[in-house]
Image 1: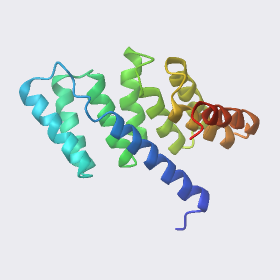
Image 2: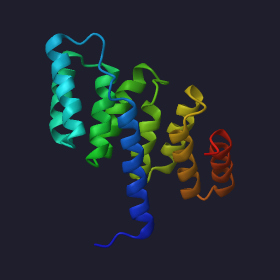
Image 3: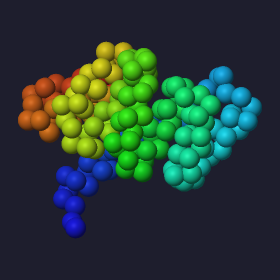
Image 4: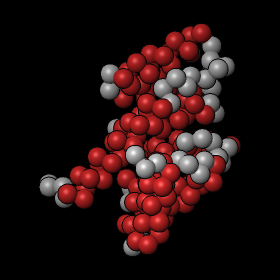
Amino acid sequence: MSLSYCGIHKIVAIVVAVTVVMLLIPGSLPAQASGNQESSLAQALELERQRDFAGAERIYKEALRQSADDPEILTRLGIVCQLQGKHDEATEVLQRILKRAPLYPGANALLAISYYALNKFDKTIESSQQELTGNPKDKQARYYLSLALSASGRFFEAIQHLETLQTDDPN
């Protein structure tokens, strides 16, 4: 099976975006974690750095048994699911966060990445716009909004968002 140039570009864009988010959030261990759980979460982060995403996923799922609705653990689990290409599972995990806190920082942007990977462009647009409601300067959300608008044939709107990105950060 051969991937087209656009398909490869899409995969690269998703991996880069998830990696950037992963680098921005790695110190986000939950404050209420017990010593044992904190140790496990530190181990999961180390497994992520070693690119053992399946191992990290197991640890995060175990941690959720003790702290079922911890948004930081759910965020990390969503990220490692994305990095393994499990975008349906990532959307389920991230939606658990958003049910309790619709503007939880970064969750809608991560959700947009998974929706984009699943070719659900309307949902990508919706999630990106929701992230921009809470954080209007979120570059990743604006970028995925532009991609989804373009994929939906809404080129003028896509260009407007790309121009906003360039205006906000000319470098």
